Length: 214
Image (tube, rainbow, N blue to C red; front, side, top):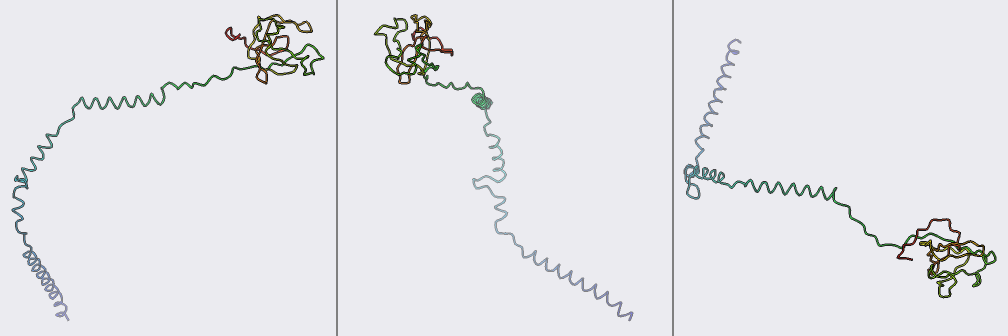
């Protein structure tokens, strides 16, 4: 039995050596089969397509890169200044520009409602010619003059008063109340004229008429 056990390792060592020898033989055969393509070394060492060698072509490329024109400092300054100006203009337009002035068409002047008052109690409920009160064309002329009539109004009628003159003709009503104030008024029918101050009991402030509008 001892002879049988001792023979085993020797057989194993011999088998490994044969495998190693076989692998080496195959590697040598493969190496011998590798062949360099025809003309490879000539193409590597030969001149570039324009007649220069590869090394010369590389050096020429480096010299060309070194000869590239550099930006002039003045051009850089101009570009930076233009960029800054654009930013400043944008900030001014967004935040600092003056607000646009909205021009609105002039509307009609503001008016104050004015209620007609008749001193004769009997005429207050009547809408007749005998109970009508006249509007004057000119507050500085006689109120009773025939050619100084602009229209008629009645007690309780609401007029639109635009302004007042304080120095018109003195007028006295049926109750003895006097006044030199005259109101520039407009009726609901569009009739304009002057109403004596004694023909109303106004309690609201009315602006004074400008001299040109009297």
